[in-house]
Length: 294
Image 1 (cartoon, rainbow, N blue to C red):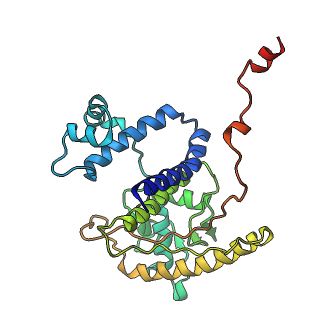
Image 2: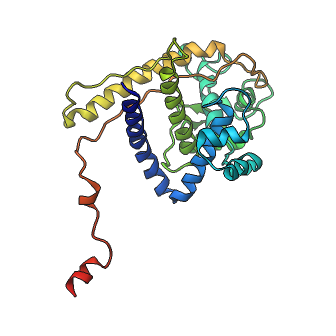
């Protein structure tokens, strides 16, 4: 492709990417001005952290030159740490690791990976409290257990024990902080993998494969296909989870030479309706009809 073709394809790809994001933003009441300010700040952040568009040590002048952002705005984002949003992590990652260890660790799982029933706390080292302490000793055990019970991943068993009935953590509330956090982690990971593979500096590409129905799938078969995918993907992911289990570290302070990595699997169903031009959809400007009737 020529450089012009590449630019056109990239802008079109961004348009397609932004539409579901804009739907999410508008549902959350985030208006364009707030989003535009965020994008402006990310341009500055990426130019500094990723070193895009220039050689050598970043300077405010260089950042402004490569991003097209005014020096005043560059200064604002550099000098005011609160200009870019941050968020404290939810318990989702901790709870997922608890379920993983409950199903894979010999201390908490029996034969064939069947999780043992655990008491909340015992004098020994085989309880829910000790399991959680392996993952993150700073998390309140009562809070963590209540959340697992609420999500249905754990159920009471008898008078004093608890049993894990799911290896995965499902979020029933579509607007929960945990699900939004998952969205915020999954989409950047996919985008980063695609961007990595498009960078000529990386001759060895990361895994990114897909399968698609040639000519499309009859609509009445979509639910059946999705059910088939769910079953096969679940088996595949459990196999990967078991492969990773022996290499897990129980020492949360050890981070050297360890890479946060994993595999995401998702099903997609593109809209097939050809979209009409915006001008044919939008209504007449307010007052136009009344003006014509005068």
